[in-house]
Amino acid sequence: MANEYVKQGVLGIEQTNNRIQLNQISLLSALLVLATIARIFVAFRYEINWDEFFYLSLIYKFTNNDLYASLQTFHVHFFTWLTWITSNEVNQIISARLIMLLLQVGTVFIIYRISCRYLNKPAALFAALSYFAVSYNIRMGASFRADPLATFCLMASLDLILTKCINHKRALLAGSLIAISMMITIKSSLYLPTFFFITVALLLVSDKNKIDWQKIMMIIAASICTFSLLYLYHKSSISVIDTTKAMNTISDSFDKTISHYQLLPRERYLFNSFKLDIVYWLVLLYGLKTVCLNLYVPTILSRQASMILLSLILPLCSVLFYRNAFPYFYPFMLAPASIICGVAWHSIQWNKHRFKESVAITSFVMFLFGLSIIYNGFIVPHKKNLDRQRELIEVVHRAFPKPMPYFDRCSMIASFPQVGFFMSTWGVDDYTDNNQPILKSAVIEQTPPFFIANIGSLDIEQQTATPYIKQYAILTEDRETLKNNYIHHWGELYVAGKRLYLTQETLEFSITIPGFYTLESSSKAAIDGTALTPGDSIFLDSGNHVIESEFKNENYTLRWGDRLYRPTYQPEDRAIFSGF
Image (cartoon, rainbow, N blue to C red; front, side, top):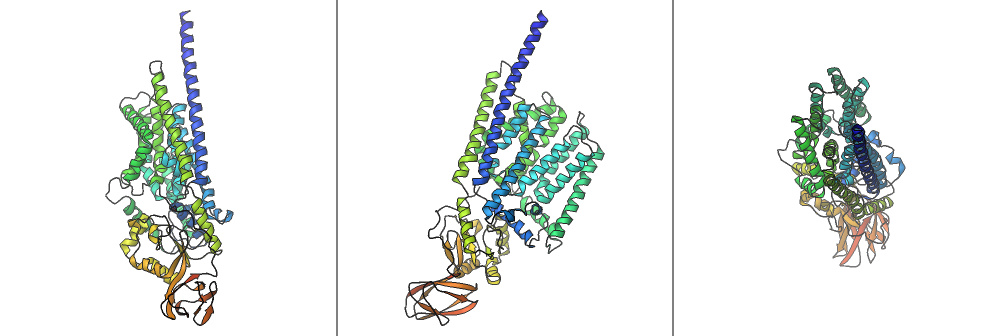
């Protein structure tokens, strides 16, 4: 009789625990669904970053046989279809974001799969939710960059290596995925210490999960062979102008992003994340403490599992020295670390003595994660939307129906050939150090009929709300060239033109950018002997020209194009890029 009561008591406890777990699974799954819906909204509405436009421009360079970089451009083979679906670059990036979102959902599923090997199901779901609820991840985790592609490949390879029985096929596939991620971005090497320490744990620490040297060599061989084959294939499909460029790219990347002897080079973004995602960091810290304790006294985790989970924090450590640890980098480095958040949940006790305390803690954490998802997934994209960007690009395409050379910060009109240089912090640093007037040379040699002042230093007439930041300043010689050859057109758009003020009957002026020019004035004039009324157009070649008028002290504007399209209104006074 006593045994029956004991059995009934045990059965009752199991039923209660199962009910608790089912409730947890339901709530965590609901938040994951909400986070996914938020990301769809972000993909369609959130402001496009300059890096995304640049990433798109590489695809156009590839299709136009104008791509010469053989490293970190492998994504072009996956996205050539973007150039066919629409003429507006904003819509193309939205389409690409949806693909990146699928990859990020795949990354979250992999986080869940790996977590399930060491933790209970609610804890595994919580690890996935933790990753999905980080503010930077919500807004930039599925942006059109290398990071979502590389993160998925690296996490998938980790999943294959950590399977209970890694066979030859999985070893080869894991190595191939590592190679693909390295072709996509060199920063994938930041995961290599994690792979190394996981291998050590699987080799040296006795547990049910083991790996032999044969599988390790297969993974390494598959990585090297696949990378070599992909590199040769990619190099043969593009216009590589310098066979040493790949090595220079690796060397420059290392010098610029790692070998700079500065601790926390992007501390502003890290500390901002501490404020926005304080719950995530506290949960991660608690999970990390639990893993470290289990290394010495295994209780809820084996020693091998503790070593493996501890190695997952290593990509996050790169924030201490990696120069480009901008917000979009956080989804890349937090993917493996978020599994440790699941350890924090797994360690929570649900017995009758701690039940209320555990419910309060988990409810509070899930509530704040939900707030983060709602705020960063719906409110921020509504405020920082891409409407201004889409509107500007539509105006450019209507004013210039055919591709024209131009310059801007980031190849915003990716379907047009961009001259000049990519004005990232890295690009501007090199430009300033070299002290060469690149924009002046581009204007003279390639005669771009327009440029876009989507960075404050290009806004030569201060017509837009894009802030001027000193670190992005252009050389005085370049700025004077822009002032002498371009006039404001609409929003951030400047076109070739001249503003002429006649104090006498004739005035000599020079044209650098040839083409039709439309006369804008309140009176008639003659250019090179051709009589013009306001609104008339005349073709002007490069060189000196003469304007004549019987009216003195009169202003005349020559605007490139034959009555070039310009909306009757100016856009709202809001920066085209508001930053991270």
